[in-house]
Length: 578
Ligand SMILES: O=C([O-])CC(=O)C(=O)O
Ligand SMILES: [Mg+2]
Image (cartoon, rainbow, N blue to C red; front, side, top):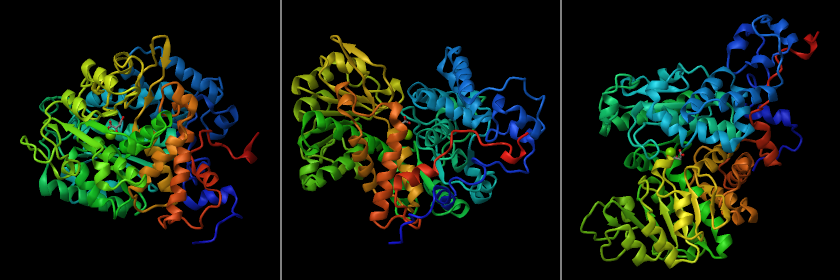
């Protein structure tokens, strides 16, 4: 192991990763004042002081007033409050991010609980459904199947050279909304805005990418406004070669340590590509692994209430796609750590897909390799209600994008079987949630522990107020990304997601649990990301996965030193001050 760097001061540490450097808190002298006024990265809007306006030659381009950054935030919030529709608020915030990036992130961090649903789930789902209508600016790259053979050249067109994190989608399974083709771009943009807002990863180092391989959704193909390639999806070897070229082009352009997060790919591709690339690229699939991690964190936190271990639970999943199988696999791993054998752990994990419970010799078939892994030796069970009656689970997890599937009958059954049933309705956006928070508390007579992928407002039942937690991978992926980047990891073992889950569960307080929440409040999500990143950096150094040398002594301080500064840069060197 290399020698720790106790003597390096924090500025030296910053330079080492280049996560700070030019273009963040320093301003390159050769840029004209006018460019700085108009460039989202340098603009301060009305916060440019009179001295700065003089020095930069932009005096007169702004009204007289000079605003404090906090006043600018208030002004933006007042403007937002005038808008009735969430989609309009989304559009306003996106246009703000195009004008003045720091102000955008200051507005987000001024009230993350209010702002997150506007730039992320659920509004981002609506934005994707209307993306062709609202698209205004190149917030990321569209690489189409027509670019096959030239992807590296296309990537070279991106103006930033130091990209450290890519979120990529092919638009085939956007949230629970299905194949939205190139309209899925809202997702990588939204995810990466959380990289910065929740984990301080610099915006200039984030690149949202949509791989446009066509779409099979008729209404989109017929939409005269559609911004994407008006063709059916490329599949088979053509698709695989395209993805392969993309992966190698990213490494050639941005380096082996550029993180590539897969987002909202359809099931089969998601699993296949993850196993193909996970050992040789710095990559993970958020829908499989990020969602698994946040769900396991919630389960681990719930055990604090029930004073049991994970292995004492029986889990029933509705859905056997990316999220469900991802969670099942991570639970399996966690139960084995608690001492169960693989077979014993599998006996506690049951899954229902569109053809009923996944059993080994199911007459209705439909068993993929991944599903077979969790197939039970049992007579066929056709419906979810029958499965709940026969399996008698104490944890019910919805990840099938079937809005309302946890109906009154199912929820009442769970409450009959269990004193404190655990109900997770993880599908997104809100319309796809398996039940609402209100339904969960009402039909279990206020006895359940509930979490959902999309946010729900607090619910009062029988004079008690419940604050349901948001079991969304946004508690995980920003912190994981920050840890991976700070340690310079070149690939991401599955264990990382268990480490992240355990760390997140540790952060859930007695107070949170008493309020009915299995997650820390959204207002503390940035410190959750940092704590997760710290644990991952420790894990990386312990297991020989870190490439950043020398090893930082104080890892949290090191991580903090890499993070995006929400304060405006000084536009005029102090010596120029008049
Ligand atoms: O985006 C979200 O809110 C969570 C997620 O990854 C999904 O539902 O696909
Ligand atoms: Mg997703």
